[in-house]
Structure formats: C-alpha cells, structure tokens
Length: 373
Image (cartoon, rainbow, N blue to C red; front, side, top):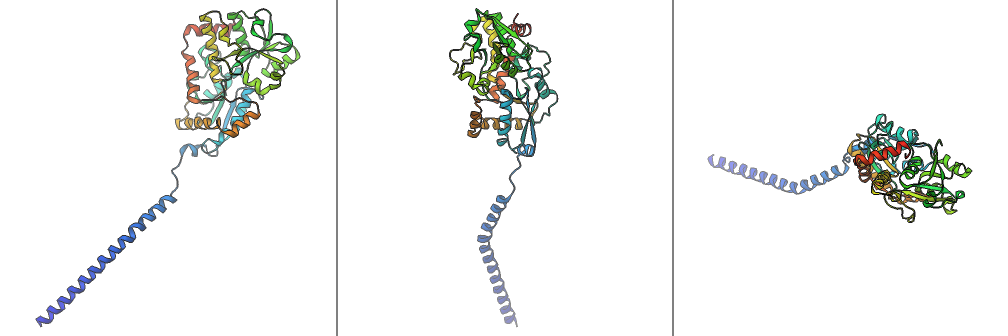
C-alpha cells in the first residue's frame, strides 16, 4: 500500500513539472510575439493620433481681418494695402480672409487713433500706417492719441523716398532753379508733408516754393498740375510716381527736384537729399529728423497688446509674402517696387525717432506748425 502511494505521488509530481515547463515555454514564445506586436500597436496608435493643436492657427481659422487704409481709394497706400490683403492670408496660419476698408481723416491720424482706441487688440486689425506718425507724435501733433511704440510693427514694403517735383511746363528741372524763381506747388493741407517739406526748404535752404493748400488729396494735386493750376507737387512717394504715372516719368512730364530720405535712391543718384541742402549742421539735423521716417515709407502695423505668438505669426507671414515669387510678380505688373524691411527693423526706426534731442524736435515742430516760418 505504501508502495502504491509513493508511485502515485511520483506520477503527480512529474505531471505538475511538465505543466510548469509547458507554461514557461508558452510565455517564452509569447514574449517574442507580444513585445513586437505591442510596439507595433503603439506606433500605429501614435501615427493615427491627432496632431497637437496650434492655438494661432485655431484662432485665425475662419476669421475675417480688417486692413485699415488711412487714405481714400486709388493712391499708393491704398494699392499696397489691397495687394497685401490679397496675398498675406496665404501665409498666416489658418488662412483668414482680409478685407480692406478706407478710413481717411487727419492725414493718417484718424486711422492710427482708431487702431489705438477702437480696433480689437487681438491681431485681427491691421493698417498701412502713415510714415510721419512717429514724427507727428514726437512733435506733439494735434489729435494724436496713439503711441507708435505700442503698435505691433509687422513690416515695411518699401523704403522709397518722398520727392518734390515740378511739372514740365514750368521750365523748372532741378532744385537750383527754385533758388532763383518761384515755383507754385500743391498740397492737401498745411499738416501734410506736401506743405511741410517745401516750407522747410524755404526756411533752411533759401528755396522759393509757394504752396497752395486745400486739395482733397494727392490725385487732386496731380490733376491741378495737368490743368496748370500749380507747377508741382510738394511731396509724393517716388514709388507712387513709378507705379501710378510711369508714363509721366518716361515722357519727362515731371522732374524730381528733391528726395526726402537718409540715403539717395539707386534710381535717383543725382537728385539731392533734402538734408543735404541745409546750410549748417544744426539745420541738417532738423531736416534729417524730418527725413528719418522714410525707412518706414509703407509700413504695416497691428494694434497694441496683440499676443506675442500672433504678432510673431503676422511678422513671419509678412516676411514670407514679400519674398514670394507670385506676390512679387503681381507687384511688378502694377509697377510697384518692393524693398522690404522686417517688423523688428521697422519698430526700431519708429521708436528711435522719439529719442531725438529735444532741441532738434522743437525746431522741427516750429517748422511743421509754422509753415517754415
């Protein structure tokens, strides 16, 4: 009996050992199968997981942005703003629409104030800011409620100079002629650069410009030249002449007398800069201050307090669009020069004008507000 019990106990132990061996073999085989299988499942799940959301793209998707144009339709600011409104959405995350809206008034002040006081501060409002807004703020210009240091500077499409021109029927073909004979030039108003530049040259360079004001806009001054009411225009962008009236340049119907910038334009090598015409260093400093904003000749800004990620996206989109071959081809068809500067450079130019020595600013203010007297 004891022998039989021992035999049964032995058989049970052998069966148990075989079971354990089989189980261990199963798990050893299973490990070689399940580990790669699990890894493969992980890869598939990660591949099919949704990409991490982009908050800037999510914000701009399906949005409509306003492009505020500080002039009436048809001028260089308007044309550039509408061109950018067409192309910029291609590069903004989410590809929003941009609609241009004209807001003339106060020679650019109305639009700048709107961007400060009324427009949403979320990156959905842009404007083609007038280049003289920094100098107007620095001199304490009437009606200024904005601070150019607080705008989000997106970029600048050209550093084209402003110019003073004569009409071919006057016989005036160079600045030296205006030192000896009167030239009547037209201007929209006494606060416009069309008035300020020739008035400053009368005071500091001995020029004999007679300035007629009251025209609604630059195009009206152009029409007055054609009619013989005035003999020139006190200021216009050189880029605007090239894009808007290239035939007048080709046919020598206008002569460029002075260019307003800190460096001569490559295609105006023989036309003097305004500050070069001053008689002493003090006067040159004043005319340089009045010329410094040419570095932001056609700049674009958004409102203050836009979240940094959105401002960064707008700047990146601008930098992309001004180098895009299709955009450049479109601009070239319109005769529009593109010599871009990025948002950081534009901001630096604008803010640096507010650091001009007070004495220089005071003299410039007297020229601007007193018509050069």
